[in-house]
Image 1 (cartoon, rainbow, N blue to C red):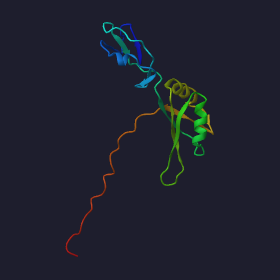
Image 2 (cartoon, one colour; image 1 turned 90 degrees about the vertical axis):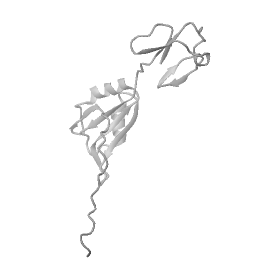
Image 3 (cartoon, helix red, strand yellow; image 1 turned 30 degrees about the vertical axis):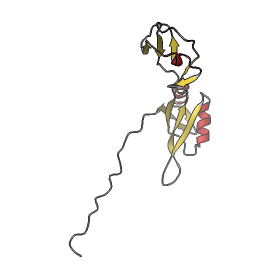
Image 4 (spheres, rainbow, N blue to C red; image 1 turned 60 degrees about the horizontal axis):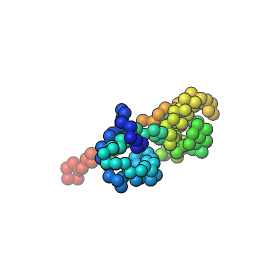
Length: 155
């Protein structure tokens, strides 16, 4: 978020009045953006907040991984393109072995896009990787359960 005396552009919100306390913010994180120290402005002069946030985090889906790939190897592969916030492999519940896909989260979306462009289709351990922006998990509903049945007759 930026504070400026210039009029707002598309995506910015104008705040005509602001208390003096709020004007004297010093390195406080507000909605993932840093507000730098400002001097107090006269009340007649409005401040304009720019809410456009840059460098959001992004999670990538990584498919067609070798079953021998570890989370450390996945992290190492993607960290060449930027800071990796997390790297996880999806494991089979019954066997405890990897299912051949995982997720890598970058703290910066530009780095994630660079990794996606560089690694999508790249052959690793004899397999061509699939790398896409991860989609939110769909709500598949609860387990439904069975109907019970009860006793028929008095036996």
